[in-house]
Length: 69
Image (tube, rainbow, N blue to C red; front, side, top):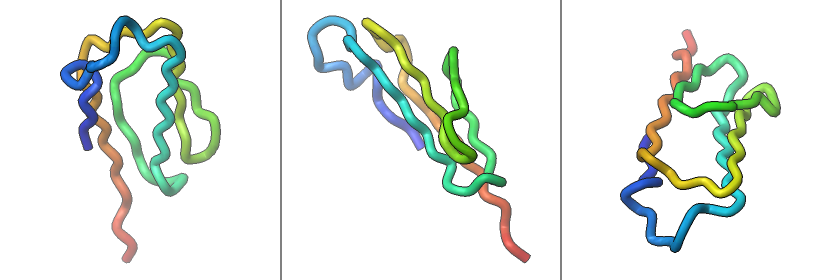
């Protein structure tokens, strides 16, 4: 999935208190996205926080769930 951070930047100046939370749904699923300072905050959730953040790229997130047999 994708999210327009840079190209959708219709705010004035940096984002004062930016928080991104990504939930992969199931604990055994895989998640991939590019960000610095990612913290695991639960078995399924990851968080990134920034102060005065100016996005320099859009965000792409990949979540992979294993097929049940």
